[in-house]
Amino acid sequence: MTAPEQICVTWRGEITGMELQLDIRHPANLRDPFPLFRRLRAEAPVYWSGSLRGWMVTRYDDVLHILQNPLRYSSERFRKLGPEYSSARPAVRDVARVLGDWMVLRDPPQHTRLRGFLHNSFTPRTLEAMRPTMQRVVDDLFDRIEAQGSMEFIEDFAFPLPASVIAAMMGVPPEDIPQMRVWSDQLAAYLGGSQDEQDNMEQARQGVMEMSTYFHGLLKVHEGNPQDDLITLMLQAKPDGDRLSPEEIVSNCVLLLFAGHETTTNLLGNGLFHLLRNPAQYRLLRGRPDLAVSAVEEFLRYDASVPAVLKVAAEDIELGGQEIGQGQVVLPFLASANRDPERFDRADELDVARQDNRHLAFAFGIHFCLGAPLARMEARIAFATLFQRFSNLTLLDEDPPWLPQIFLRGLEALPVGFHAQGRAKAVVG
Image (tube, rainbow, N blue to C red; front, side, top):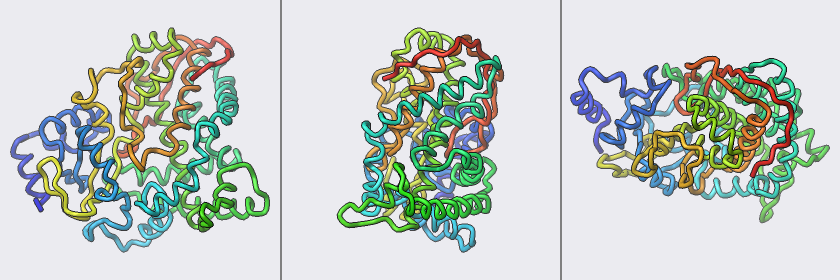
């Protein structure tokens, strides 16, 4: 096995005076990581990052290879990490106890079992039934905004839309959403990987434990009063006579609530930001509402909400000329793969009419995002309605702040000006 330290020394020798720029945590890379990805794809597509303590993988074909081999590249970060990553801290144990049952952090056969309980809740037919609810939430949010002449897009729209939708699907009362956001933000501070290398584990522990307590209480309510929602589905589902334990239900309630709004909020914010920075693309989409479907796919490709996922080498592996040791962290960077010029023509250009767009923003294979159809539908309805109800959208801050995170990519705020045009019926595919 090649020592990580040797890789770092070799690279420092080649790039004297530029060490900081190669650190994904550098502030310049927080704002715009794509120049770094470009260089790594060209010169070190499998690169040991000292600050991340893992192997950054940046080329499309290599990232796809990792996602296609889930048993060699395990998702079970709390079970298969090498001893150098382990911790005896109580906060780590508490977080691992809940997050360890997330289906996205399990390998087959447990992943297959857990995903099977939820698969039917995210079918096209099921989601189509949610379309009127989504449109009503979008319209109601824009009704509150239109008289203002400006909005803080994240706070006023991009957060409350997906949060309201996933809460309705799960059976979470709408009045509990603000508290859920507090807990979710505490968890995001850990899962997102802080820019300053703080692990934020104590914050995550607080958010996870309070969410767990909340959902255990909600389970008791649903046991006595079944509803047409995901919590009741998980309580009642018995495929092949199997049932989820209360702990498994609570764990995946936390996952669904967190993933159901966090990533879609960032999709909406990132997409609108880049669109308004590309006036020709903005004008094209406004004049061609039929491009809403391809535009959303392009927003996903161009600046993904989840730049990377964390895998653990289940065995010694050779990849890209590097020897990866069993138990080491492997970080396939989806955001870099989605800008690989070997896979995408004009990879660094935003093209809302792009057709050949097999991006990896939702991952691939058995861990392909279960909520991808939901996020796509929400985003299509949101953008189609936005452009029908508001014109002359403009950025009020050309350099808005990004969240100080590595594995979740989103804006802290996005102030936007507009002219209101009133309600119109949105028709989206």
